Length: 119
Length: 107
Image (tube, helix red, strand yellow):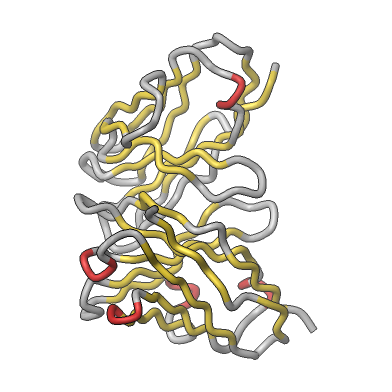
C-alpha cells in the first residue's frame, strides 16, 4: 500500500524548535518530489515546502524561509521538516505529501501531525 | 506570487444537483491546476490534476475544465459522500498556492 506517515508534532514554546518526520512506503521514494503542507485550525491549506528527488532543489513559502528546512534521506525513505524560531502562527496540522509524477500536484497525503506553538 | 480565488465560498445543494465551483488565478497558469476534496478531520484527497485529468479511482461525476486563469470543478450529480470542502491549487510556479476553499453543504 502506498502511504506516508508523519510524526514528531507536539506542543512547543514560541521561539522553540521541532523536527517533523515522514516515513514513506509502498513506492520508490527516491523517484518523487515531496512536499509539506499545513493547515491552521479552521483555516485552509497552505503549501510550506518541497524538495526534489535528490534533494538538490528546495522551495519554501515566504513565511517560513530562513526558519524551516526541508530535507530527505532516500536510504531511509524519509522526509523531514526542521522548524526553528517557531511562532504562534505556525500552529497547524502538518501534512506530508507526495508530488505527482507529471507535475507538482499532491497525489498521496499522510494523516498529518499537529504542531502547537504556545507558552 | 500567484494568488488563487474561489467562488462561491459556500454552496448549499441537494443530492442529485449539478454543482460548479470556480477557481481563478491572478495570472496565467496554463493548465497547471489541481482540485482536492477535504472532509473534516481528514487529509485532502486529489480529484483532478492538470486542470481536467481525473485521478485514478475518483468517480466520473467529477470533472474539471479551464486553462489560463479560469477553471471550474463540476460535480454532475451530487452524492451524499460529496459534502466536503474543495480546494484548487496552482503548480505553475514554485510557490504552490491553494485557493481559500469552497464548502459544499446540505441544502
